[in-house]
Amino acid sequence: MADSTDGRTRTLPTLLSCCAALAATPARLLRPRRADTGFLAGLESAPLPPVRASVGLTVLVQGRMSAPTTVVAEGVRSLGHLPMAMAAYIVEHPSARFVVDPALCAQVHRRVLPGLPFPLPLLVAPDKPVLGLADALAARDIDPAALDFVLPTHLHWDHISGVLELPEAVPMRLPSAELSWALDGPHAPAGVVRGPLAGRSLDPLELDGPPVLTFARSRDLFGDGSVLLVDLAGHTPGSIGVLLATRDGRRVLLAGDSVWNRLQIELIREKAPMPGQLFDADRDKAFETIHRLHALPDGIEVVAAHDYDAVAALAAH
View 1 (tube, rainbow, N blue to C red):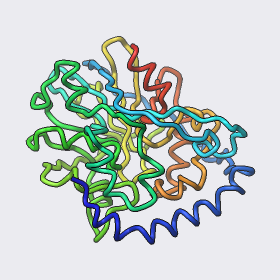
View 2 (tube, rainbow, N blue to C red):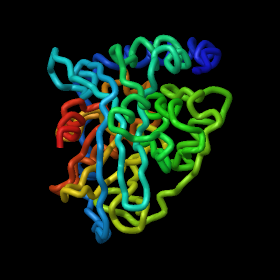
View 3 (spheres, rainbow, N blue to C red):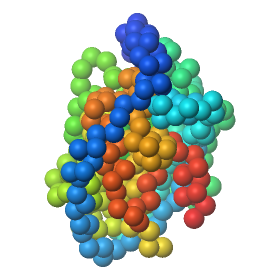
């Protein structure tokens, strides 16, 4: 269950942050932050390691909502809305089966969202109903106990709530910087609910490998080039991307919330201050990461976690 006491304690600071973000938004919608052409020109693409294995990928779409286009990618002159997804990804490696972003549990509106301070639940709640992770796995005849570990791209509530429906023996692997950011201190950062992490085995890992593509740090998870973790810090301090070599020959980068939609990559646009100032831990670092995604070479399929069209297309493969 969510710790609603922590949410209530954080209400006033969160309200003040929301007011500041709202006040900063109109000017940035008219004059968005410009791309750093010097930084972009200096990016080089480091080689990928040889691929000696491949993985299967199953997409479990669990929920959806929508958001105004102009706040997802600031400066876009549009009155439209973008559909947004919440999904989990089952990865089948020859030596392990694991889930990237165990997104939602059943009844997440009751079990998890009360742990967020007001008014965040009003801003981020998915449409009802949602598909809990246990039911999503059952629909694919996958036993939750057969999962070897979970690998969140970061620790915001909508990327880990599904662990409430997994055995506690299934460990969670993620960078120590992310753990420290989410769990140290008296109160959780905006977007984090600590309840789903209680009692979970947390296995820190480090991105101690060389640069790959446009990313400064990496980790070859199995040593065979099939699953590469890359540094996407900014949205949260330990945000990672998961670059997969799939069995059908594609290279798919599960990019978490480094961007919410591919439009941000194409235009090099960050989120508007509302909601970006609430949910991006380091706005400058997050904007830098968008540049790195923009500069990727051809052949890398970037899937932002909340880009419904990209997630649905991946699920249809």
